[in-house]
Image 1 (spheres, rainbow, N blue to C red):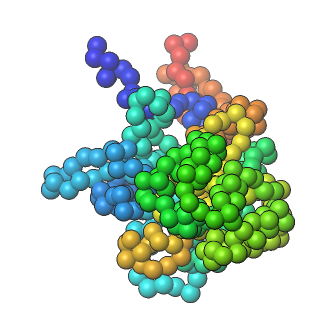
Image 2 (cartoon, one colour):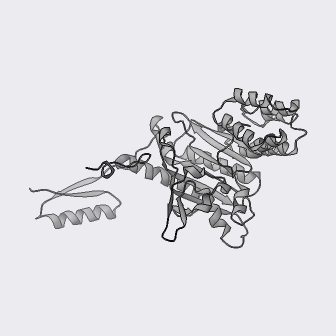
Image 3 (tube, rainbow, N blue to C red):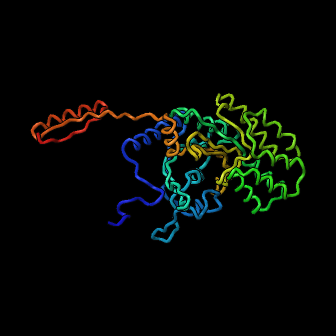
Amino acid sequence: MDRTKQFTPEGVRDIRGRECRRKLALEHELMETMYSFGFSPVETPTFEYFDVFAKETGSVRVQDLYKFFDHEGNTLVLRPDVTPQIARSAAGSGPEGTKPMRLCYKGNTFINYSSYLGRAREFTQVGAEEIGGKGIHADAEMIALSIECLLHIGLSRFQISVGHALFLQALAKAAGMDEETEENLHLLLSNKNFFGVTELTDSLPMEGALKELFSKLGSFYANAGEMEELLAPAEGYPEIKKALSELLELDRILKLYGVNEYVTYEPGLHSSYRYYSGVLFAGYTYDVGEPVVKGGRYDRLLAHFGKEDGAVGFALTVDTLLNALVRQNRVWEPEEECEIITCTKENLPEAIKRAKRLRRAGKRAELVEVEE
């Protein structure tokens, strides 16, 4: 038999039985937490026009998209990321209301990674987006909500790393980096190669204060007090100072939410998604190599779809979360109890009545026909 009839394509798989029930229950609990913060559900299409995820959007690399054509010859893609879809939808939603749009979603995303990487190519995400949310309080609330989601499902050993997109952008601009050098800097930071970052900055002419700020890209700070050491060398660079001031204000608000113990600050934090324009964050836990949550502010993205407005959001990767919960022995089992009702042809009417009574009472019942 043709193997394509027996196996799934590389990077995707079937999910059945207990694992599937766990996953569905996990999605439900995450969505319920978002509802409790006043977010409303939204569904977006599984595929979109190519332009929604073109290079200008700043989402996934074009070569990593699943592309195909419709009957009219339009290029379509399977969504690799829900955030641009939310931005597109919000941009066409008409006049702004009196308060921000608070939207939450769940759905699968698809990234066509190289087969050499051995990574999954289909992911389930649960996320929240606030369109029209401006100011640091909106950023802080999103980080607090992401932490509340992780705590609600039983995860306790995790850390949210927070940075600012403007910090790195302004550093590269002040250093006079061209596009190629800036890309190299991002690659070094992605690989946590801070020795390479030092070599790169040593090769560029720059003053001591700027070089000192570059040397802090590999640092971690537990609170705002520790970050204040960056203010002095940033004194001649307004954009860098603005990014630091926003992080200091963010730390103050997160203390009011009582979640600052789960937060550290990382000046060198950056994202492969280039639409982020302000505070950005990523959540990590033990026993899994990928972030369980990623998010940040993306004010420029809405302008790509014709609407000038602020926006901030995050997405939780359900598959990675479930792996973390299982490996840390934190996973809860969904309701498994099911009454098996055996019946013959003669007592089938009574068996059906009994099964109906149990189901109406909210219980599970399975009919099994036997010979005797």
